[in-house]
Image 1 (cartoon, helix red, strand yellow):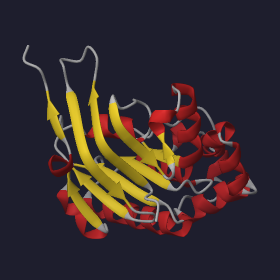
Image 2 (cartoon, one colour):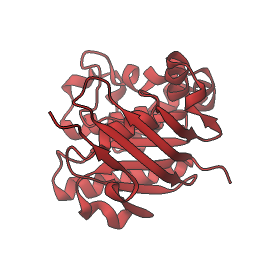
Image 3 (cartoon, rainbow, N blue to C red):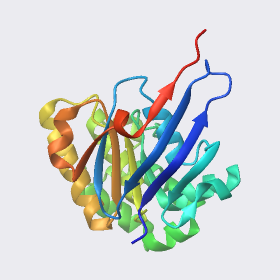
Length: 230
């Protein structure tokens, strides 16, 4: 079975960033699997996510999402591929505060015709996701900036899930939540990812989240990093 995500013999170094480099010999996420990737600040989590999402390109090795080797794509093609196949939940949500919730959720579909087709009636699907994520009735017409932090977080999840991308990547999405709210949020996220058949890769520093995931991986077990001396 083709993995949802596979990194093989990946080497990468940021130009002009203190000589920071990352190596990842092998990492796999199976279709539909949920994986928590644990790592402290500065351990390379953001760099790894940049490679997984095609924001940065590996210097060598292979980053594969589904059957596609991201290294064979141009920067523009990687952007289009990400829009089609990867739902991203950012730590700071990255919503457009003055745009309606519906516009925020539907935004990825503007750049992803196949994903838009999978969504069917996109506005109705956005409404379904909002209801499933316990957002209030009528929320689609509200400006995203007027919502509470927890509500904005669930809008970000709906945006990542719409159109059933095969891979969901979440960057510290629970860092600002208390334990009770974290538990509720993760339950909603897992339910909707499972309904879409999406694999879930979440990065966090919080090991307490691990019980909910199929697998917990320490970043230091799959990645080595180096920063050149000043």
